[in-house]
Image (cartoon, rainbow, N blue to C red; front, side):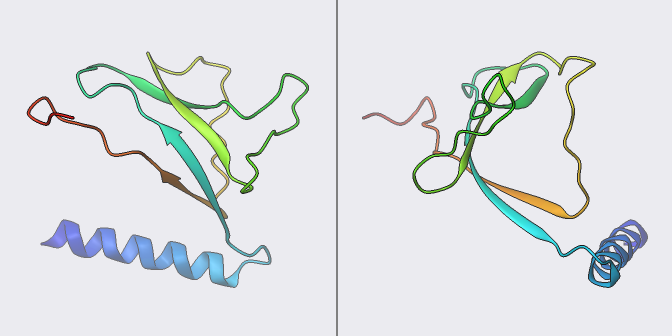
Length: 101
């Protein structure tokens, strides 16, 4: 119970800090292609809509695309942890072994 209260307090403080900051909160929507359900092990997310020159190629609906990749991220891979950006990933429901098409 104590841990839950502390976690809630931390979230509220974070929200309050964002509200009081000069930079508004930005919400991004993106598509995420997941690894297969049976994959077990470390994974990381990479942008597949970023071109080699650094520009971003977006879908016609304006959303970026990401993929899960096996293994931990490379040491030089930037996490892109901007505190004022919230990314919401859309994923396709995966079929379990008991489902049939």
